[in-house]
Amino acid sequence: GQNIDQPTEMTATEGAIVQINCTYQTSGFNGLFWYQQHAGEAPTFLSYNVLDGLEEKGRFSSFLSRSKGYSYLLLKELQMKDSASYLCAVRDRYSSASKIIFGSGTRLSIRP
Amino acid sequence: DTAVSQTPKYLVTQMGNDKSIKCEQNLGHDTMYWYKQDSKKFLKIMFSYNNKELIINETVPNRFSPKSPDKAHLNLHINSLELGDSAVYFCASSQVGGGRVEQFFGPGTRLTVL
Image (cartoon, rainbow over all chains, first blue to last red; front, side, top):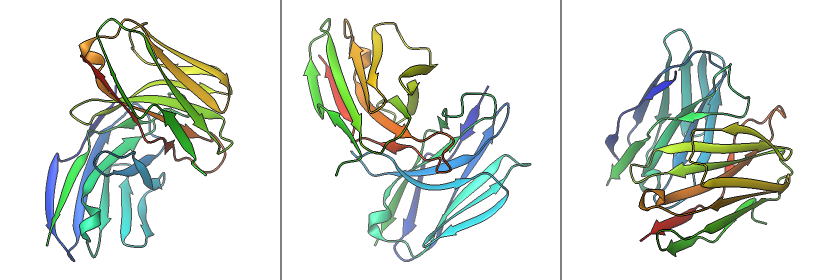
């Protein structure tokens, strides 16, 4: 089976840095995604990690440790528009290449 | 220039009715999906089609029937709607094995069953 855990809610201050953690257990592993979803909108792709290490993309970075079944999304220089839900999702090796399983999401609130 | 589009955006209907949601993508992708996002915001895959062939069929009541007339379209028909079907339904597409792995989501269809 598959299990993905991430905190339900987090709060951070504008201009600060926040780290959203995700742990997963899967029968095989073939990549981890982070998506952003603003209230009432569609999820949009942020990052994809398949190898261990840190991937940086502007203010957002994503880290993966396959041996620990662990990832985090790091958001720097937080802006009010970063208030959204952040979804961790995993693609396992044994399902169809197109299937990804989403966690329940972390709702991030940014305060001024 | 919309990449993934869905119609309708909102759907309010009575229990027992039959309804359809349409999805189209103009990205040239070979794979399309239907997801259900419930009130707790949990996004769960329902179906996936690759080049018009069903490749993922999760544990979904058989009142839900997807249809893919071509690889740019994936429609969802729901028979005998129930209160528990109320949710937001997202269509998505991706190019499997094409190097870019992310899925692109449509704007969602908010279904309310009364």
